[in-house]
Image (cartoon, rainbow, N blue to C red; front, side):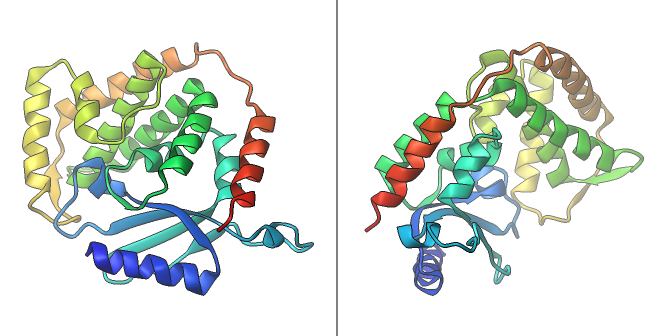
Length: 253
């Protein structure tokens, strides 16, 4: 599959007249809890020629592709990426930590990660993850069964928020690293069992609603929200972002 993905990425570069700076796996495969039929969520950051950024008419800063044969490609222009960093977008942070790389540019990734860390906003990022947790709990509410994948989405998001609030650092992408924050062995054993099940079923697999685990998630979310609201706000360094953008587009091949 990796060869197929790499060939597609090179074709995208040619068809879209862009240079891919790096491409990684996102979603459940990178998080560490894929199902048997999980898509390959390939996310890439690219740059255009300098002349493209100097045109009077605006250029597209995002390329979306139809999902074909479980391959889901989405591409973001470096300019869009840097604007999202100023908004504390957590997706960029996750891409930089992905354990599955298809195209790597170590110097670029190291520099971009340094930018992300310098602009990291624990309050906004933790609120983002708590928002995801809330939405997933609302989806589950009132149902006797739920998709197993939705349980893990809720778990991963609330644990990411917990990591940010307790450590005030970027949370790891992989679920097993986040799970170390759980100090209840009974819950850990239960989650580990669900992980084993998920690895052998498809995305639509349903489980009976686990009230104990969902209540734990809900109570933790409420506790974390109160703590997140006490975290100080930070000011972003727009000039640093501007300088990085200019350096990136000037260094085109």
